[in-house]
Length: 161
Image (cartoon, rainbow, N blue to C red; front, side, top):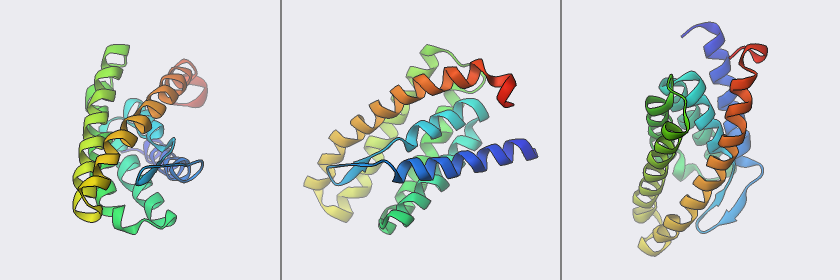
C-alpha cells in the first residue's frame, strides 16, 4: 500500500466513523446511518483491503464512541467482510451490474451477520428486528453510494483517485 492509498483509506475510515455516528436514526435494536456508503466507496474505488479496513475499523470505532462496545467485535467482523466482498466483486470492474451484485452481497452479509450477533446478546425476538432495520440501512447506503461514486469517478483526475 503506497502513501496515497494509506491516507485515503485512513480518511475514509474516519469519515465512515463520523457518518455512522451522525446523523443516526433510531430503528429497532440499533440505528440507521450513512456510514455504509463510505465502505462501498472505499471498496469500489480503492479495493477489497481498503473496503475491509474502512468497514472494520471505522464502524467498530463508531460503536465504541457511541456507547455500544458489545458490538465492536461483531461489527469489526461483519463490516470488514462486507467491505472486502464488495471490493472483490466491484473493484476494477465498475458497472451497474457488479454494483448491484456487490450490494446484494452486502445486504446478505450485514443482515445475516447482525441477526446472528444480536441473537445471543439480545434474544431472538430483538434479533428479528434487525431483519427489518438492516435492509432499510442497506437501501439508504446503496442510494447514497449510487449518487456519490459516479461523481467521484467523473472527477477522479481532479481529486486524485
